[in-house]
Amino acid sequence: MTDPRIDKLAQVMVHYSLDIRPGQKFLISSTPLAEELVYPVYRLAIDAGAQVHTDIRLSLEQEIFMKHANDEQLDFISPIEAMVTKDFEALLSIWADSNTKRLSGIDPTRITRHRRARADLSKIYHERAA
Image 1 (tube, rainbow, N blue to C red):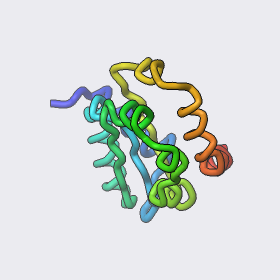
Image 2 (image 1 turned 60 degrees about the vertical axis):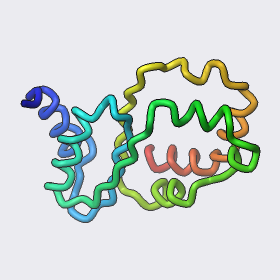
Image 3 (image 1 turned 45 degrees about the horizontal axis):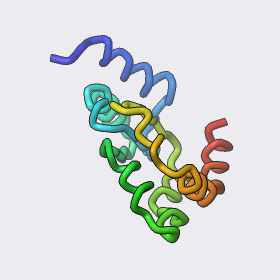
Image 4 (image 1 turned 120 degrees about the horizontal axis):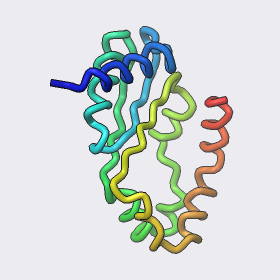
């Protein structure tokens, strides 16, 4: 049995905050820790007629990438991420992490390099979010 407060929050997100409509391309981005909220959001968005895609990130994914990626990988822009950033009408990111300090041991120049490579996408994202 799900918590009715979570169902209510999902309804507010889908129908009020995001105003999901039929045919909209909608991305739900989160971690497995938030699956209790992701499932009702996903169901309500499907019921609303959206084209829903999920991006569920593993807990150590970013840390492993930052530690082991070579320069070419740090500079690479995923065509999938670029398409989502440019073409999707709605995005919901549910930040749920068990260790918010996970990247504190990573050389800051690696993180900066990866962020610089993504600067154009970040700009598009922020313009569309505004």
